[in-house]
Length: 230
Image (cartoon, rainbow, N blue to C red):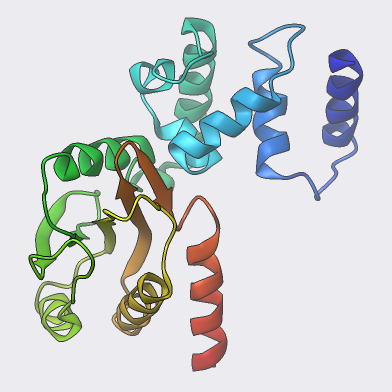
């Protein structure tokens, strides 16, 4: 059954099928390093961990092997693929997209010992380095207010390239609330006006996390903003 699925993937690539999803492309690449196994679950796990196929290519072998099911051969394969892509398209290496795995691990560790709900907005430089960080809290476990004007003023002053935001929940539910969506939309709109890329809004609750980027929720918000400003 797996071999039949692989043959269909091979046929799609050979025929130049443009409808291939990122999951199917990741599956296809995994077929070259893992034989006679259903690689779809691993492909989905890699995309969840690193956010995109580009994120997988930008991950280090050590980061890749932290994903259960990825061995040295697969990690080496993706590293070679990433190196080849960057060598033939040097302009892509000029700007570094934050590594999803590292970002999640950083914020998960940060929120581990936080006892109130907080929202963190990190402004990033062209190479992904943090150049300014805002931390907001109302010293409550159920809400937090954000000073968007303060962030906008700092963006106008230092002109960052991009940003990542994250906050924590104590409700037991990691999924975003209507208030979370509203805050994300307001910040995304403000950053759009200033030409700043909002890469993600992460929500943490215990060991679980939710990514606006991975789930496609952030893309929908950005599409709504682009439609509104046209």
